[in-house]
Length: 379
Image (cartoon, rainbow, N blue to C red; front, side, top):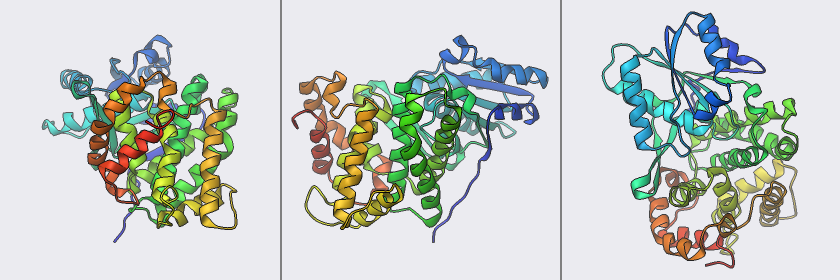
């Protein structure tokens, strides 16, 4: 028996942030990264809170690939301030930190529920509507995908105003992350008609508008569409989950600290080929679903295999246009160090929760083989 739930209330459109004046919070803990403070963007939030006579404090110690240590600091900050609302402002790192902080703080036995409001400033993770959070442990060079319905935000505010100044390289990386979310959710063993509907709309938007949004960051209409696509993709994978592209990217990012979306972009063509059976010259069940996705993007040919090959070629063409390299060694990662890390990364990827819903069962050797293909010249 399948199920689909949408626990997060979504406010979208230009200046949607003004909803905060009606959020009925008395004490708000604003969690953001230092740039939100330095750039003054956090004032778009705090000014509204002040107008509503809500007291607030800012926790701005967020780092890329948020760590257990940062989450622990955030929980201590919350325990001291005792907020009734946590507002996350920023990219996936800020949102994931806030989700983990809220969950741990609530588990400490406080008397009343703390509402979580997420305001994404990048268009990629979809974290504002998902039960997922990714937290890093630098002591073991690891990333862990946490999945718990208790982490689903109460409210998401999709205000494209925050995305207009995002650098083109970040827009490219996060946008490909959206595409990866849609395709992985689409072929997931937990996919349903409802998750497919969200994913189909999101993948069409990204395919049509991402390159143009990267080329012209001030195109507010396309920025808004990509922002909405990110959320739709989040709705899809929050219910359907993901697959080995994310498992591999988590282990790769934890070890070599490359942007998550960029890791997905490099891995995605090889994962599609593996899952569909193209690289092993066998037609596997996921082949038909990838072909359906390709058809939605205007890609079709005489056979499903040829269609999926054209989809892979189209993704590679898009990533080239976005200046995303084909190999991890083009990112400055030492080839010998990468080769040495493959066994450990493959083991970590196999244990990742995203692997459970991959359409093709995998072994450590399978995952190691995919890693080898993203090393220039194949390791």
